[in-house]
Length: 235
Image (spheres, rainbow, N blue to C red):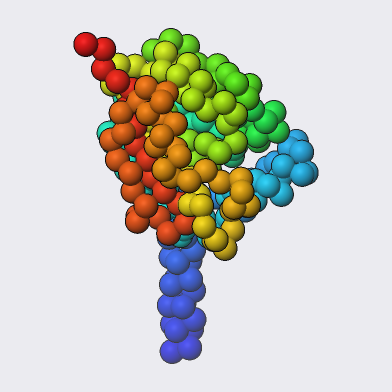
């Protein structure tokens, strides 16, 4: 009888533990990467790229919460994520109550994000818009967004001064741009040194495009700098 009681005790503990794991799984935030994600329709080459974007190691060096904090209060605002890729930041920002326009020029990235969006909670789907753009046109309407975020994207834009001059028309009065990109020095990963844009050059180009520099931070992220700029107010 003593052994039967011990067996029943261990069995009960095992079942309770299993129930707890199932409960925790149900309340996962939608920005967590699932190993069961269905990407059977995605291009195999982009899937490999997506695995890098969604690597669990990225949380360590990219510090997404710190990056999103640079945007300020986003609830109820419209945020454009230029060069969204897999939507790594888009879905995190949408989860905080913003309406997010995830923009990319790669049709494979758009398809990947659409497939993932279908798996999100309905309330998150309603706040996430996925939009295919062109290299010289983000396809944003006049006064459509409050904030523009570019992560690891700035250096890939051609004719940047003109691009950001035109972008001003899509940003609401006194709206902000936040740029995160790789420092122009050796890092364990990231684009080639010659493909990177130095933080001083980014500042210069943004000023030429008509923005006020709000903040330059080269300390918070080990491999990247943060620049926050604001569309100039109309007097």
